[in-house]
Image (cartoon, rainbow, N blue to C red; front, top):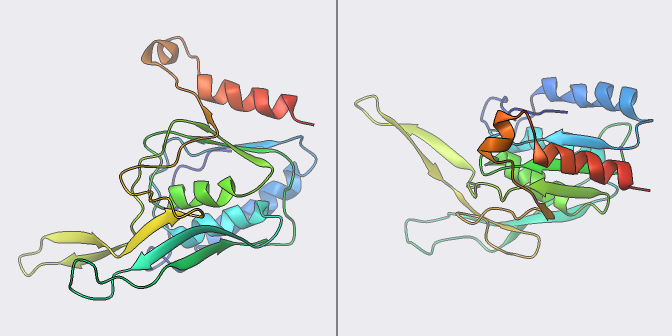
Length: 201
């Protein structure tokens, strides 16, 4: 399953785009499969709610998957206390067999939130390269001259409170596909994902 982006929703953050509910239809057709591979290698994020909507279809129970502090004032250190982000079962069916999530340095923003959510699930394995380290829940603004800009509003960490910004999320299994591999049509990351599913019990 390739998820190229988590875009949609009117504010880009909290409103779920109903198009992502197609995950229920997909999983109803795939529920007898031994495992599922989710490719986020080129997903640069967009909407965290959409990412959580999909991830919830793989959650066995409610789990804290990330922590964050919100900017609450103009000072450099004006942040809220740490708050939890949780993942919990969503939809009528949850796929609890082996799941492999493929990542790269391009995987960013809400796609990294998805990776963090999947990372706390016992049946999920993250395979590939470290993610981009671009999680910040940005707001978008426009200047009087028409220029637009965005600013991060949150300071994110994983469930163990390890900061993700400019660091990224390390995979469980680190694999790289080189330029030479690609030229030959070889995808080492995907191959490792297939191997993990095939060898799972």
